[in-house]
Length: 452
Image 1 (cartoon, rainbow, N blue to C red):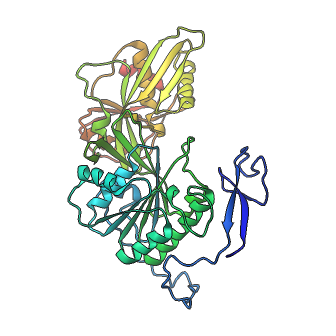
Image 2: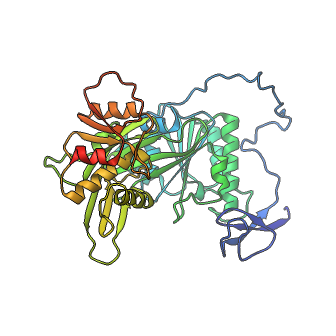
């Protein structure tokens, strides 16, 4: 029996200390230092059959390294493939985080059931019967998906050696524990050690591994921050439980862009891919309503049309309220100040509420002009004509600034039947002829005069 050694770890950032301290010097958090027992024992590989005389890798000239394109596994899910950059890379480690009950397990089980490859789904949270009940709703006739309920990594690797799967799903990394660390499952040491073992397995066997990660009340993935550095891809699954739509974002991706976005609709039979989100995010109102404007935005390679709603009313209390759902509140205050100073609208004594429909959040500055148009429409109680959309940024001087990839935005608006789009006069538009009318504007006054 090896000598037992104790160490102190910060539960927030993972910093290690030789003795207990009240405040972590790395992240400045109080009372986050806990003692964990670390058993010093010689670690074996995930695969005990590997010969000890295995040759170490040697350095290569960068010109000697082959630059062949890596083949990717098709997940049979267009949205998942898009966010990953084209599919699952063999030997990669993917970490999927999200709120409890948002649909992480459903998404991964759905992918595991539909794949043509042999898949091992390891669950440390649910029994095999629970998973079977969900599988019957999603895709009952799968011959390639194997379910294992186990939390000890040594037992999991024994089953992997016997089964030799093409894809491994772990639900979740916080429930796993290894014999090499004598601390509770979910602790800093266990998460780090279990992830290290899975990385070694993925790289040596060229098998992709997908991990589910719990999140803290702050919205960050539970465990040490080093967990996100160790994996190849970090995905965030988000959405409001009151809405049926879920959004899959990439926070880190070594094999593709981090700007991509996948949209799903939660149904009784699982998650349905939303291939044309613009039609979903725009409400089909027959009557004209004031305070509503359509913005053309771009998420990754995908153009979207979203509906922005604004409500401007007289402030009942002394201090006017400013609130935005899905939109940055500081940017909303900035746009209101521009309207007050540059365009002469007296909004300082009025409440302003803003909402992006569908429960999604957008950071694209190109929706500024649509936000301004929705606020002015609500203030004057005059509806914006149907078939009009906006794609421009508003500057502090009240000027309309150009945005990137305006051609894609115009084509998406034209495809959905819009007949007029407002863009900046300084935008370079490469389209020769379009069915949609392109209205070029340089100042907010031009937009106001044209709209109202």
